[in-house]
Length: 100
Image (cartoon, rainbow, N blue to C red; front, side):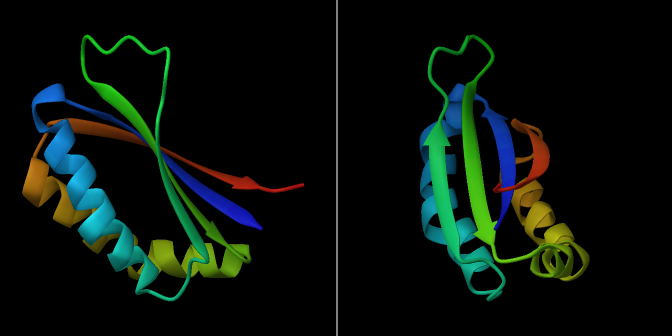
């Protein structure tokens, strides 16, 4: 199993709206690609929130082929939607992991 993890620091003034957007638009859009088998949004605890709130969005897929298909065919569109809606009020760091 592959985990595509996106850690996002979101400015506090948009955090509530951003969480709603993630749960009701962005994550369902990723689910609709048919490439992921699971989704989870977490808030990191014990973090300095002076510059924003940190979240981890985790998406699981069966194999690297599905992940690579997402990256090549869908990722840029998804990222563009986020920037169009929230501009520079967030920053994201992405990582890919394999469950062992």
